[in-house]
Length: 86
Image (cartoon, rainbow, N blue to C red; front, side):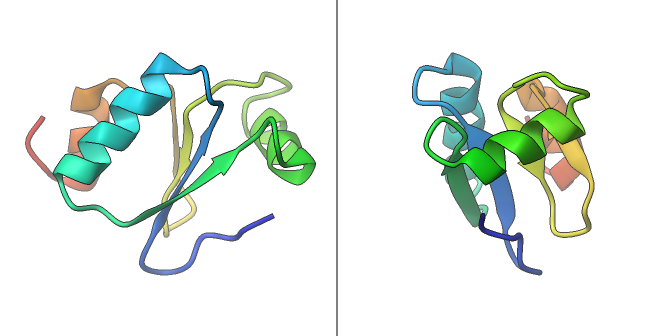
């Protein structure tokens, strides 16, 4: 499973998740570097998402370089976390 490095955000997703597409589009628009991990293709990533979310496969689960997380954030929540406009 990929680990977050000091300069990127890791976004755990599934291919069918609309909220994932929205979060990734926002990160792209803001030129934020990120690594995408599809939890349906990576068993270790699935286990990590379930651990973070108390047994739930909630996506997007976003892990930041400082180790903090956001789960299924709105665009406004994601913007606040990054200190950017929504």
